[in-house]
Image 1 (tube, one colour):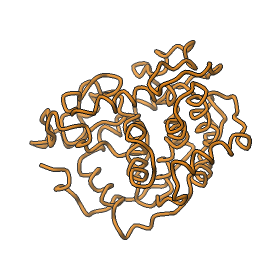
Image 2: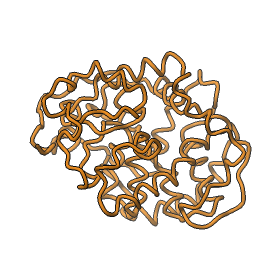
Image 3: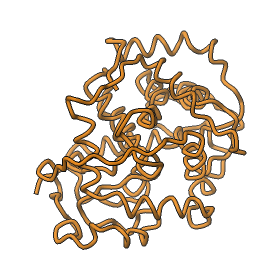
Image 4: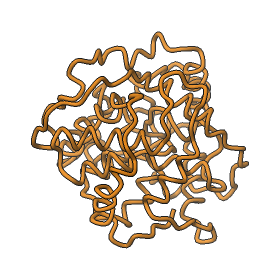
Length: 318
């Protein structure tokens, strides 16, 4: 059964977006510590990152000791990320009647900059500063220009909060992602919370393979709706980014796959390259937040040049 055969027409009720609360839960999920410094350059995009070599990485993803709000977040996310919801959100995204705002990448960054959590004790940085931190960590490690710009834009999918009908709450914007339409792997975070998801009783979705075929590639997955998938859909036909960069954007929250080794039976030839790319990007996404403020105006000319190189049409439809 192909995912495209299950589209539903009913649109979800638009809930009021709370940017500060979203960032608070997003930061709690990442459990990000402060970065003390960046190291000297290294070569290939998938070579070992050095900027975070002195950090205790284990402390960043200790979900088993996570605070109550993170557990509550995943209880809601796992209960509500159904096939029906995901198809409905994609139907809305592709609806020719949907008014798609038009912005440059830098304008999108400035728009996202209105999201800042004043109550977050980990950081007082704006969104632009956080994006620049990721990009600068990649740049200082000597990674390719396409990977630097990927770090710059990777969280712009959170703009879905501003667009009518593109999200219904925090639970379908942030958090770890996973395929819907098949049995959830036990390596998904707080997997027991899927017991409240109605798809558990579906005769096809509850099976191990569900609507998918082993060996046909991860591209067949209907990934849980969120800012990763939203940005991928925006950029895949509106950029010059290589497939490795698009994989970094689409799958950087797919921790069951790139961190826990789940769902590998669905991979096809060529998917190992994408997995390697996502794993190379992950340290810069997860460990690069610090309260050391990047100088936005000083860095802007360099990144405007990168933006022009990989987004030559300038204006993107969101």
